[in-house]
Image 1 (cartoon, helix red, strand yellow):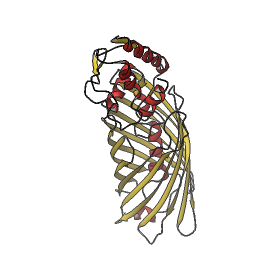
Image 2 (cartoon, rainbow, N blue to C red; image 1 turned 90 degrees about the horizontal axis):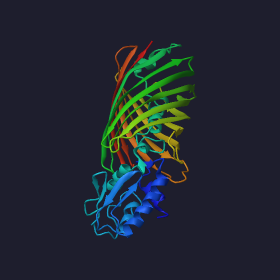
Image 3 (tube, helix red, strand yellow; image 1 turned 180 degrees about the vertical axis):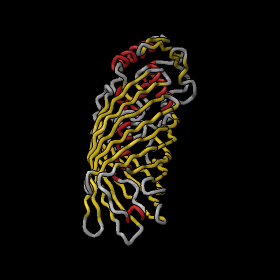
Image 4 (cartoon, rainbow, N blue to C red; image 1 turned 45 degrees about the vertical axis):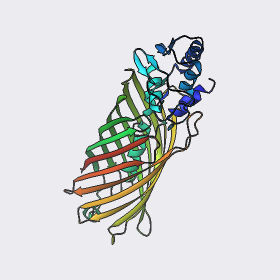
Length: 388
């Protein structure tokens, strides 16, 4: 049983994390295993009343807690399938195979792990506040939609306030290893102010409601940033930005009804190199972002170093419309003590804009997450901006 803690954490690293009482729970599990070997069929684990079928022997109890070492394993090695465990009247492992989803649900039910890590900094899924911040910085602040022909021809007026009045988003997502499906809906309000032709600063306030089979959450916060844009020779333009952020998430576990409050704090920098020739309607660019975030979870690995890199290609359609396709690669470069290192993924998307007037612009888009082992996502958004 010495490898129990690490085995459970590795298998659940992206979806859930240790609860504060995990160490005590481990001792309970060891005691329950000893009890099973002497013929006992019940025990108290993590404060929960747990019982099991008489046919369950001690080796099977050990296997249930430690045999599955990584996501994707579906059969419990060496166990004939005669096991059944009951937690406060709820039956687990009643089938002939033991899946990762079965194990996660059981560990959640006894309180050994917490659902909140799907929301924590170490997660690459869009349920995480750190992932939300990184995505907002990359796609909204450092690499926004290109200007239309009309906007390009207008001389830039200093001291302009730009307000995003309605950025609405819907995302359909799923944790594939646990078959936990859900929806994320929300909006983003933002404002930026041009100090001069080179410098601007702004703030973004996002809000999301996350509703999954096993948990629900409200997430909000603020991202503040300062941005510098430098014109280079040969129609190149270099933009750089620094940012700080504070996010708050309140979640409720649908399995245990446990309510969790999570704070996430951090900052970072980003840059973009864009080529925009007045004689061409095509506008290529490449952007890079680094973000550091730390959350208030009571675990050792409660931080994340995240980099994002990707190209985009915009095209001016008529005088008042644009379309832009983009892709990015995101990698967690943190050196965790217990969690898996080196996780990464890709996303691809398309965005269109329409300039209704000199002051009002509409935009809409779609993005898909690719390459995450246990998470899939499709998101759609509709927004507008006003210039004063």
